[in-house]
Image (cartoon, rainbow, N blue to C red; front, side):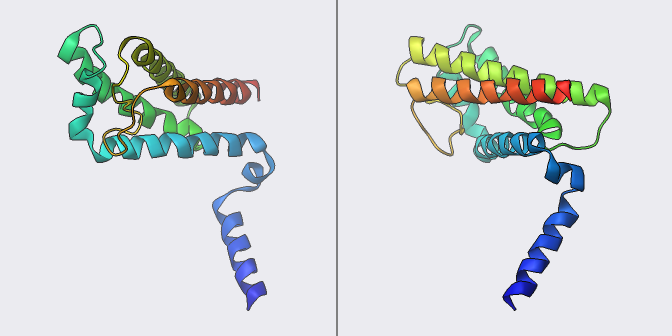
Length: 161
């Protein structure tokens, strides 16, 4: 019985992931970053109605308009990065747009984390929306910096291949 279960799960794994995906570690790195980005999107969109309040607490230039723009753009850019991160079949142009979304959203999150850490201490980080309310601190700068570094590495790795 145990061997049949192992054979079943192995067959299911092989059916889901094609051979070239199983052989190339770059796909797994993109998938891992894709899981992180998906978690961020889900937590942000779960309480999206409160996300504008969080972004307005960052006191960015432009006031409420910029806060609303950030609240809409951040999840949209994260969503736009998923086709690249999940290794979906797409045209070269679509792939470049998805890569650009990943790089831009990583840079914006890092910039906002740094801004909030230096200028607006004790504000909500917003990384996980209002679902997981966490205060800004050095950890947000480090976390978003590492996500940004991972984004640069997976995009560079994909473009070299």
